[in-house]
Image (cartoon, rainbow, N blue to C red):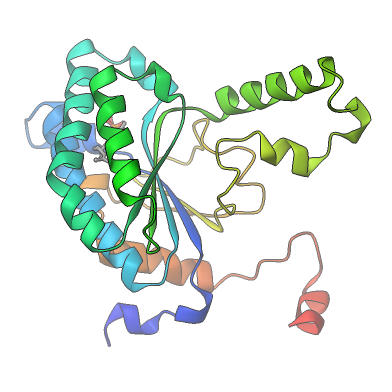
Length: 249
Ligand code: FPP
């Protein structure tokens, strides 16, 4: 039986977020430099996106470049920016044809202007598409996002537009970069690391985590399906007890 057939397509996660990790180790194991691994990582992005489309996933968020990644060697940072722009340039027509909508989260203004231009073009071209939303987290960190949200709320309070006591979860969500995006039901991290690394800290409050030893360049559609099956084998209780879940089903 094909692994996709084992998935209950009625209850696939609507949103899957992925921390793509292990490109550097994958390359170094083969005696290459780290960028070699990032290049192969793009192929995994293609395959995982295709698999997500087949599995009814509506939002796929990929942690492509964190705020902390600026501290890597300049050569690697420049290579990653080039790779992003080159990949978008190569793939944009096919992505558009397959009805994918490209979105970004993160501090876009902190990216080199040639990246911003390419990302804006991809966003504009695909903004009316209704298939999978491919969300690239770029120059993103959850603490940056939260500080930003707090600052925006404080300004509203300062301007007398909002009472401090009226701040609730909804008003916080309104100020996050993900405000139009549902929370991920499933978070995947590759390469055997069991950390969240400043990714979507608010949004993963109730997410299921799937950790795999597979390095990102080796992570393919089948691995996404395994993660979805793992997710489907769990019971999500949101703080309730099992009996309450059964009663509400
Ligand atoms: C983590 O591996 C990977 C990254 C920081 C970059 C991910 C980028 C891509 C897959 C390519 C560009 C993406 C798109 C969306 C076109 P690592 O370098 O931290 O690996 P290591 O832990 O083995 O060192």
